[in-house]
Image (cartoon, helix red, strand yellow):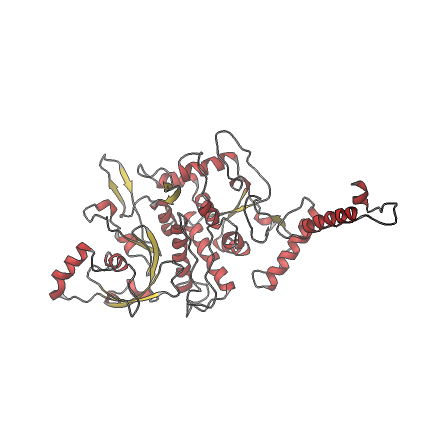
Length: 460
């Protein structure tokens, strides 16, 4: 072995076949270790050179400006495949996760420390459909509990593309005309905006996975081998948050990276555990609920993404429960709204009805919960909800995230009064037998609306 490392040759003029094979395998092993870009090394100089190379690549492909040498941030060894290594600037240093933080995370999510995320959650990420396609603006959405978060972020992406904030680039003339770079920019802007709102417009926290393990295993807490490797990066400016996410966007959309979980962790840390507990009420003590061997998001998670506050209910303000306890709903209008409809929904249950704060957002974009399946409705006319005349005849677009959908469905909504059809329409509204569930969820906002599918087959 020492002879192999030093490179000394054996005294025999000819090497036997076994010795030659052993030498080749030895060299190939070390060549793979030093050339494979997904693995880290304990050598500081090697890390710096690798960081320089990745930064230069980012400048060439438009993912960000050339950065000085920076400390590398590496993925968890437990993941099947990982994105390219992320690099972090010294000015963006942050504390590593502690045992107390990891414990509090599990308790806030699962209600205990005996559960971890299932495989479908660990694979969920924010990956776009093909650029320059009919769905260039759209995320690929998988199955499982992470789907609701993906669709809520989808609504935020559409909001950024159609109605950017002041000082940003103007609205997209076409949601189809998006390059990969534009897609990354839209994702970074959407995630940063959500985290900034959760942090009460004061700070945001972004979580990434590092190479080092900061939390040891204990008998009282079940680990997953990446929560224990978190590092927290805190920002006091929204623009800095957006730039950091853009520079590290592969952690949220790259294959093998638990992008949705990292975003959810970032959301909780941005909100802070103290604010989160103040948001919740007796009906919701933690954010996820078990379902069919996995976990689904409670309404508090969706409201946190949409409004910046983890309100457990969809009605306006606060209501009194059956035991005279205070139940917390939505306190203000947000940019993106929420609609829901289900075959088992009761119109007599006032607590389950979506209030006007969510039904009438500032912008015409809605996350929709239809029989437990999530989708997005949106209008490209910003004035739709600010001028009642615009609501007489208008267009909506529908995206449900299904792989079979190859373009957004174009709907025309007619809210003109047709009194001679009132009795028949009311009967149809009550039974729900003649209308598509998509039409039914639209009618929770515009009760007497007629929905034209413009040649598309109605979604059932």
